[in-house]
Length: 105
Figure 1 (tube, rainbow, N blue to C red):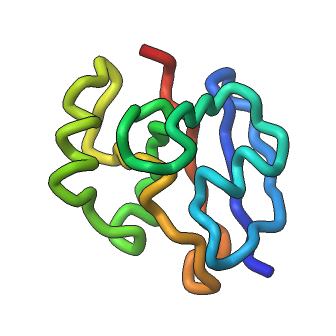
Figure 2 (cartoon, rainbow, N blue to C red):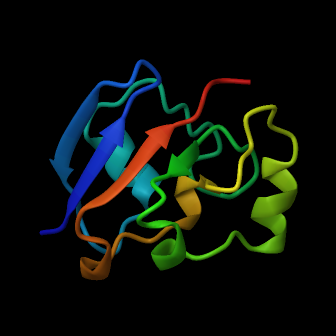
């Protein structure tokens, strides 16, 4: 089971066992991180699961697609490592992935 490290908005880090085949958002939500709202449930329509991917992992998760990028444009906290966690599928290749929950807009 791959590991996923999540940094909260306050910078507290917690590493959890992540289930492959689920999105990073689902893994964060299912492990009790309440500050990730994920209001649309993973439909790529709200941007409330915005995370900043650690520099060491950004190339491995790849760039956002056009719809995701459009949603991220609405955030005051978008940066070059911004992704919607609902659009990143957790795989064994992402074992050790680190993301920080972006500030709320």
